[in-house]
Image (cartoon, rainbow, N blue to C red):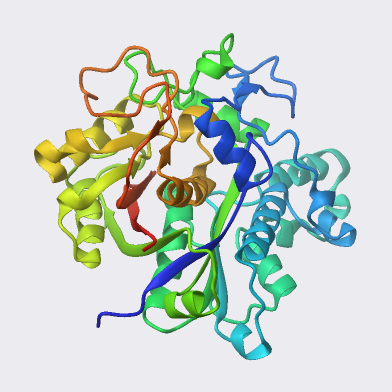
Length: 413
């Protein structure tokens, strides 16, 4: 079954670089880092003291006051970004439309801050002091649920949990729902709020995080020889998707078209990627096959690019495995170099960035790529943004457990 075409007509984002997609993209093009010393909690006893916090986010700017106490911070990010994307799409949906309007918002961890705070209350003041909102604030599906309730979206609504690939998982699943006629409209992406003591401590003892505490803005350095780990970030990225002909007929602004989706599993290790990169290679290959294009038509990749040793080298290997000599003609970059790794939200934000990159032809830099790793020898758009005529772009996300997801976008024509 060939299926229907799927357009991206709305975008929304909350990150350390701003509370909308315009500010985010402008800052990325300028090579501005959103990473700094953590302000949300006391890091005195922590080996890692840096993160990419959405410090200027105020839920009151986006959410009805009575709803705010019912939402964990990750859910607030999800709701705010989804409302932005819906507004950006400039669409009015009838009650009939809403029967085929769904929401898929992934989160790798969900209500981490709520869990941490309520366990502290339990231990210090007893079980009767635990909030009655604890469970609905904790569970990861509430970003999608609150959004669906607010907008009356009665179609397929869910929360994929595939670690750092959750956001891309959500966008890919939403694309397929529209492609095969199950829904006509979808909000999809990812949200996470894990810049909190338990998460930072957990990733730090795994030695997954950068300890460049004295130079926060230089800490995230994907593909650089001196990278020493990722920087944890927070926020959300959400896209509004709709059936292509509907978008065209209403005169919608179309940022890009989703044309392919690839999913594989390394089946190798709970945290490390398979160094042979076979399944990461096949993941991208599947997206290209679904799109029905030649691999040489791909000219841009928004990489997973975490700034960890194993990931960056493995992703580079996967790209070279698939594209052969054409790999050196592809413009690649890492959004995480400036906003850190948003875990389950990463793929959502990076799908927003990929859409804007194809829409404008402007490719933001990978900052801090001062000393290229010999094992990472592709064109990662170091240090300075470029302008290029683009046709097809891939957004990669690879999560703990070996979960590999990628989406393939086409410049709208």
